[in-house]
Image (tube, rainbow, N blue to C red; front, side, top):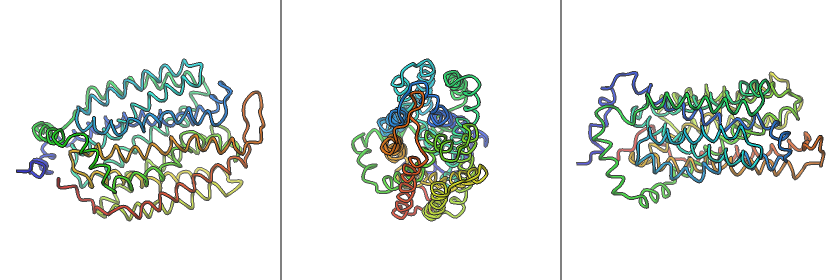
Length: 436
């Protein structure tokens, strides 16, 4: 008897628990992802403070910011295997604890390299964030709702991205960048308390099922499970699609957006934070709406192609249209976030394309590609800026011209086009879960 196909995993069993419980568990866990998105994006808000405080170049700032993604890339694949094999709740607590401690240390740092080391350690925690949430969602919700649930999880995360923009910019302006980072650390402690109290690994009465699943995964072995994930083309194409479509959000919202907007469009830092916040606001709306549309149509590939295609002209407008007003920039950044939110559909595609017992392992491979692209392109963007820099320095700080930013922003258009192309190679799953 194949227990993986048994009626234990039916929707009737999931419905046997109180209706509120899956939502409470999964979306409390998603606060971990929310917190890691603050970590991921806050360099955009404090970037000008770091340039001024440490007297560094754009390339050095890019390397410091990318240390977070380097850690993610190094640990994502192992994180997926750990989540498949150990308590998801304990893994979340470990990741949160490391992120909180190193964030607190960052606020007292007087070296950009210590800042980078702390950001690297926070990235270790981030390697568990989305994978653990998707793992819990696959245990607590039926497959027919997965795109919607994952979309909502990512929406919670993008709210963290918004918090890291205007609210954090306001706190940094009033109190200083170091104090704002310490407040982020304190927020992490509060979130840890909620997760410890409310999150559980699986629904009541399902212990036996998941014990068998874990035993089967152990019997399969690490080497075989890794080989199975590596040999599935869906994992690769979904990873490339999501990484490229997501990259404008990562680079504009995570590091270079404020500097670009203040230099090229002459916004104040607070106005720039409004615009970068709109990327996340658009994504917060787009993730659940596009996810629900995908579930309703029982289609994955078509929405991924369609919305990635719509995001291209918006990126071109942001790069090439001069003298844009604040309102125009707000609308363009909102639309970019809205349409690139289609990247969340890739996660249920991966879950539907791999055996349930190795969902996190397969997700870890794709996430490695997703987080690897910011690790590569953040310093590349900085390198492009320094390469075309005219040598201007004011009070020890590098000053970059409008043409320098235009030259570097072409990178975002190219990677977005690459994501659009990758979507054509993804196999349609018709929103059907893997029977194994």
